[in-house]
Length: 470
Image (cartoon, helix red, strand yellow):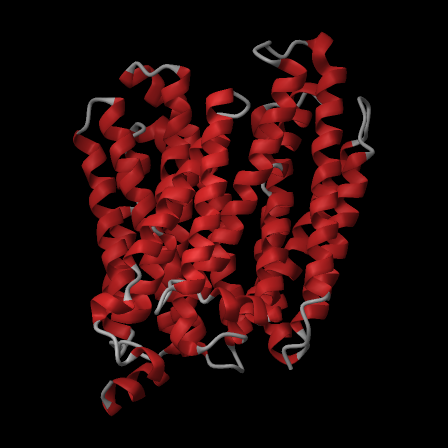
């Protein structure tokens, strides 16, 4: 890295941050916007319900299956190069959708979008943590978190309007100009990194430093776990899930004995701050992910709200999280992140408690208050938790650390979704929801919210016991 590039970089940290935020806003926005285009896609491409359900699921698998290998390559080759490659790949796969006329090709490009997002999100937090410095790391990470939440918040509304005005393909191609702008800004503003190599790895060649066996085991185990979860509770998918658990055990064993592993399992277990931050993230994201779905069903079926009005109510949680996250991140730069994050867990549990007591005639203010507490609590938790985790690792492993946190988030989402699917299948199987089923639906809502509260309680325990960063 030349002195001039360092000086230039130091003069433009905020522009560098916002160029990364532009990408981390547009990609989640485009991913969530697709959900509102599903009926139009089904009608245009003549898609059945099973294949239609894979449109939002396919990129989730793509984003997880290469997360750790890509993060390790980023630590070896340079995070900027991997990030730019991810942006190019995402733009290409989005533009390619314009010319397709079959669901099979759409699913292929959705997987590619997921793979591209793993390039982007495995490196974004690591790059920001690297150039922010210790005094501004929490605030900068909070701003990145806010950009993600804003993208997820704006996505459904944007997807509905784009589909109505320009057709469903516009949901894919319209964000591409912004992604190219982000690509150009990042290429210009961020310096080229020197590939990281700790003294103990310098004796190895580039091929030896990248753990091919571990990468294959990781990808296979994640694939079995993912497809096993999506097929629950069928017997063959339970078997696939068991195979995934076995491969995960094999991955852990191989990582403990590899010369230069993807993840230093021993160091991870010894780093109490990082490991407990990961577990807290797993629990809190597992608690948060089903809320949008389950509360929207409650509002539309039991409360009788229209989809638009229900959307405005559930939007409250995401907006408050987006507003609170950068403030909490800034506070965690000056005060102990453990205290702020754990306070967020407490408010989060309080929100679940308030929502648990909803009934058939509950006033809407109670639902809004519960969602507000969830939004504030999660905003207080997310940035300080990430700040604590990223502050506790060696700079040469920031890419892997970022990927592990993303895996914890995705794992929490997958686990809670699987549990929710099992609950729905137990109560409803293949029945259509009719007014006579609303008492059962209320039971499902309460059961899911109760489980979410328990996940949050466990997350609060891991957060509180992680130890002091300062």
